[in-house]
Length: 301
Image 1 (cartoon, helix red, strand yellow):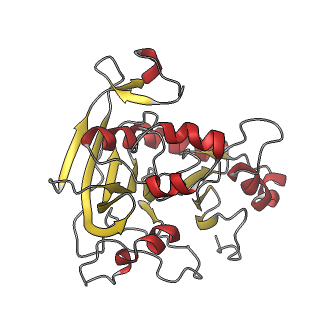
Image 2 (cartoon, helix red, strand yellow):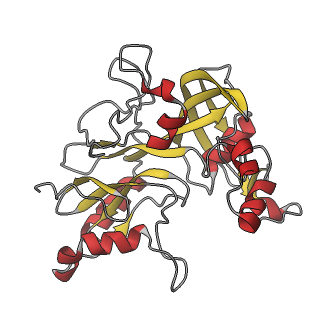
């Protein structure tokens, strides 16, 4: 269908749209769905405002991939029950794939590795003041994540000087899986209050908000995790692939990630923050990388 007028609603942007679905690029810390009456505006509110005409004519929205409030990037929404069913069946066939970009502390020695480590809620096996916190534990649910280093770089900061941009492909869908597996691998996500330098920063955020001390330890007020690539294969349809550029605040903090493709660059950032973030791409390789580089490819279940 024709693209909508390029305007942001609650700071999220439309990436692509059809009669059956819409893909948006969600910023952090926009919450996906209301958690309580009278709470702050959410992506759900923005979608209902954006799709008011569709809803008045029988649309029924279903958010397919839910991101944490502090995770940015691509979100797929079905517009009707038939589309939601078709996409959910594709998920069961492993024909919907997700690739995340993560900024991590440290330089992984391996260019590519897989973490297969079960995860459970930390409070189930030990005292934990944070209910949601997860940990790797042999009694946990099976979890598998594939990682690939896209770029290693140095930057003088109050939280170290070695960082890496990593692509993460989760093959299971447990709570906080990518963040827990990166912490377990020894390369925590930058800005992660739970699985970064100290989970006490999560409690400090609740008590005191974002402080200069927190900024010095964490660098970002949210975890640097971004849903960068999303793909879908439906029966009798051409495969769909969408990409979202790296968040502007990452590029502002680490401008070395802005290098043009072909000049030792690994990522495809939106180089003009004023440009629309409409970057839908169909029929191309699964990758956060430029077209000359390899990345994790989709696998058929």
